[in-house]
Image (spheres, rainbow, N blue to C red):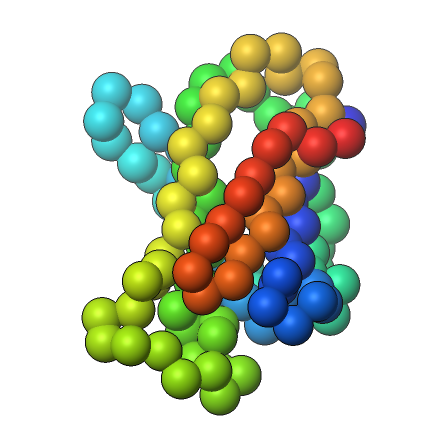
Length: 117
């Protein structure tokens, strides 16, 4: 239980290894950085869950994914400005005893997310 994320590159059909991600807590329009990390070969945080079930708190959060930089690092030619630069996902945790998994499916031109299991 806790909070986790996973990113899949739908352009190439693989995990988004090497994508930079930042996690923030948000409150009253203010965002406070919790941590920055780079996704491992499986498209996940190399340190495991972002929060375990004991440290996750009820509240609002933001995950920011470095989409443009990731695709450019793979040699994908993007227009300038790119259609997607960073993808920010704002979400709420109502029940801190539950597991919140926030997957991102992404290409240079689209993304999708949902509350996973």
